[in-house]
Image (cartoon, rainbow, N blue to C red):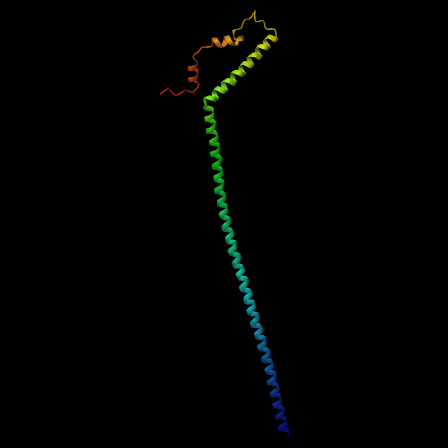
Length: 171
């Protein structure tokens, strides 16, 4: 009896230990599977974050390259604008010079100048007369415009030649 009871007790303990061990091993396997799943999920997250980081780096490099291209393009366009400004200024100067050399401009200017001269001269005469200048006592030849113009020398061609605007000789 007592050996059989002890043997039975030992067998029972072995079975219980085996069952307990099987439970612990099952629990261990379940936890290891969960650990593998967690590690796999973390690896996926890490890979995703690394991909996002690499994408952000590529986008940053692309943006930087694009900014440099825009800066170069801006410099080129600014140089073109400056060139066009200079061309416009030069064009204005050339057209101005052409306009000033037209015969019609000379005629217009000389006509305007003679009108200004005549108005000023007439105003001057009016002031002399208004202030009681006695023409009879002090005859002044310059007070008669028509006479003064008639008395002027007629070699205007030599004066025009000396003014720097010489006409081309006829061919």
